[in-house]
Image (cartoon, rainbow, N blue to C red; front, side):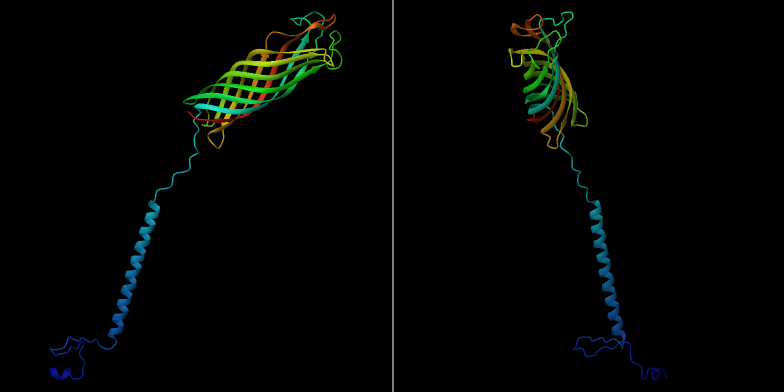
Length: 282
């Protein structure tokens, strides 16, 4: 009975019984396709898992990469020598008279109002201590600051605008002290001595004229700021000078009524100057 129950059934696996041949295991019908599909699915899952792992690792590496440092603008060091140029505009006043005091009672004196341009060169040295900048600066400028005045009721100028005062050149030697703000802006105070080549004349056409170098105290304020290139700076400054004493420019008694010698007094000049400097470092 038991044997008859298996008659006609196909075994699940069959193997060759020939000992001289390699074992040959065969799958039942339909089983081979199932196994192939399982193998393909496993291979696909393995590939997908490997790709995901690589992508995650790359993403982590990108996120972990340190950020590049932000670009930092070079901070200028203000210590050292500098050379530059200046151009400016000046206004001023003066007084022509026939005595050294220009204060004779009852006389009205001509007062030439002066204006004009200057252009020159600058050489200086700065020393920076934390935010404080100390320095010394010298400059020389050609000047054409001129004033003319007509005669008054009791002071003759020789016809027309015959009383003339002219600033022909200016040289200064000044100290500077400033406080550095935001690393590039330097407001400063300045003071020192100035030397002016002054010319005066009377008459139109000129009856008499002379020129003389006069010294004075000079003071001012300004602001200097660093440009994109840290070796270059630009500045704007105000300077004030008052020439002391008188300028005796004529000995031929051409001035006043009655005629006397000619003097110029009370000369003052206000300058606004723009400049560019090239620093050479410490």
